[in-house]
Length: 277
Image (cartoon, rainbow, N blue to C red; front, side, top):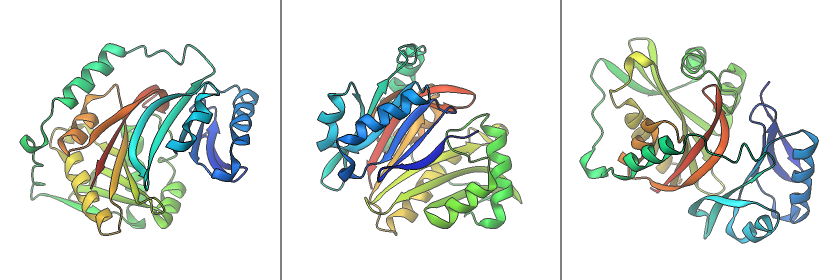
């Protein structure tokens, strides 16, 4: 059901019918420029609607020449070089943002935030914030299954959570007693010193307590100890909450990925936020 991650030449991509896109997650520079045509062929062969790439700034002109558009930028993502997210649409209906007013309003609310005026609340004493281990995986699957009808990666799969926990992802959660009520993750790219702070989920009855900001602050502390100095996220543009949370934490807006991700039951646009930690 979920899209698959494979090597295309020496680069890493995710593609398939779930997100109806091809995502170049990690570019091997030796694959260029032939990789652009290979991605194009893969998209057409599988009747996908969008190609989405994350590449260093120096490769942007080659993708622009093939019909891509820059959707977001994170300064110095690749060491001394900016990281750029570009999209190319093969279905013009997918290129249209059908909720533009809502997306604009959510971004306006987030950009109006002054971080100094919104310090995180302390986690109430009856709750505890912990880094999660293998013993928490079943609870994590249950939480994500309750919160997200669909998600771009298989976080509802205990094997996926276990594998990523062993390799490059730290998961954190907030408990009331023995019940996991909120969670998030830090996906580490040690090669570039970047962490994607993502997978935020809070049970509906526990929202409004600022748990997402608590989790974000805790993850920042942990990744700084691991020599990771850049934090980023890709947040749902149609939902104000996470955009406001990252704005409160001092993140900067990098751009919007139009109709990019299958999340919460439909394809949605996503906002990129980043912060030099």
